[in-house]
Image (cartoon, rainbow, N blue to C red; front, side, top):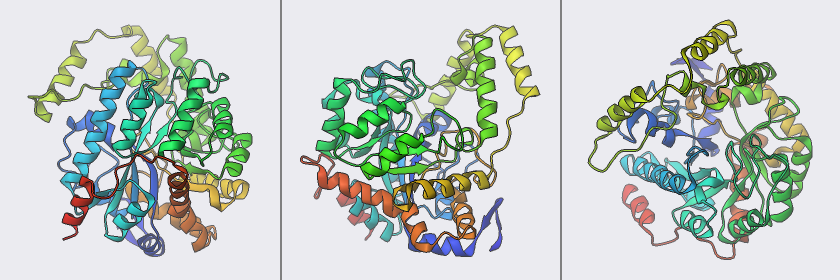
Length: 438
């Protein structure tokens, strides 16, 4: 090991390993965070930021070779509005790559992702987090595929009309006939099915319908941490039979039993106070729930100022007494800290239960408020791999975890697609890649 860099140990062995083996992170919410903190401006990401978990400096320090950028919009949006907001998120990814072509490169296939890594760029892939973003339309689904979207998470925190969410109102309803048709169309056109956020019923029924391997883009083990977003033993067994991959995540509620218990108590207290548990920051007035995007004639500064004005002008959704009681609960019940060691425990247990061929990694940076000690931002991956090395994971196993397994799933989904719809040879992104490489 050598020294410290902004509070993160830089470990020679894992750093060297990750320079040779491609690390692909399954889920990063920077696009939606840019909507909140910069009005979608992509400037200044070549310097360290204090308002995000992600920037190009820390991506480089974390040795990330490929990144699935999540284009998440809230599931409470009306579905036609969700389609528009998702397109804005995809646009943000493209503008991000265009702004830093020497550091980032769009990739639509496994081979393109590897090629970008070999050119020294972070391969930038796109995943949609929530089936509400397609508004129940196969045409919308196909158009997203034509824009280069590679996976779609079937639900977010709420049920769709065709699939049950892990935290929705009807967790036992699974897929309906429309959901089954969506899965088959995803197989046909080469979109990866992502089962994070879905109910166990949806997970099992999807694995029964799909002909291609599926993924969990950011979940952990229910056996270690009893949280509805984690994956049960019965589903993990089905996942192995499907050939899919579980990309283990770092979200404190998912990796620490103590934090999960605290979060359950927080949610119960919110419900006692008649406050929506998932939106408590909004009701406390600390941030807009989902700020509006820039209007055509606005600068990003104008947009930020307008969102602040809009937030201040809105009538509070709760009373002052509710606000005071909730703030008092937080003061008396501080959130426990999750740790790097707890995250590594999930990796150890998952390897033992599933085998190394079914594991990947996914931080969910910029999608959670806090992260475990030692994994505070995207520069922290060498610390995780260093911990796994100390636990005697072999280089072969670590290479499969880092990227080989998810690349294998991508290739199998590509090979099984009878009418792939991602952009292909001769399209605009290839011209940008060739130009950027000189």
